[in-house]
Amino acid sequence: MMNRSNVKEKKSAEIKSCRHYWDIEAASGPVSRGICKICGEKKEFQNSWIASSYMGKDARVFDLPNMLEEEKEDEEGS
Image (cartoon, rainbow, N blue to C red; front, side):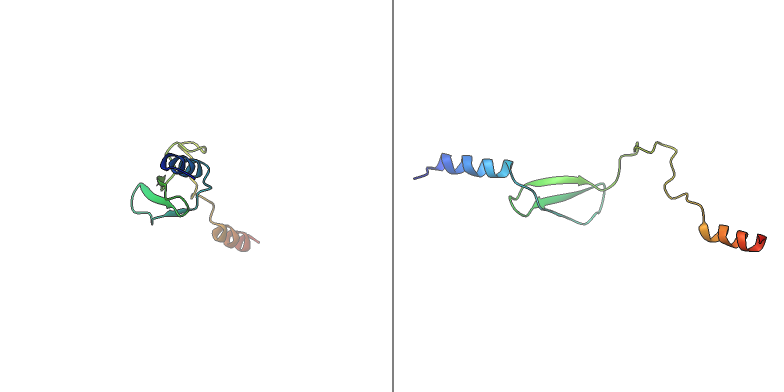
């Protein structure tokens, strides 16, 4: 027969070994709250990358060449 302390220890061990399945609220600021659907643990998740990403400060992810403009120039030049 299990007593209350054994039940608490078992539940504590289950939480520590939980393979979380997060339900994260919609982004509406720098962080979103998430709750594990399995164990009920709560956690905050960042909604964006930290400013100093691996690409460096001067990297411009969205400054890609305009491929359509380059194709038009190639067609006009040919």
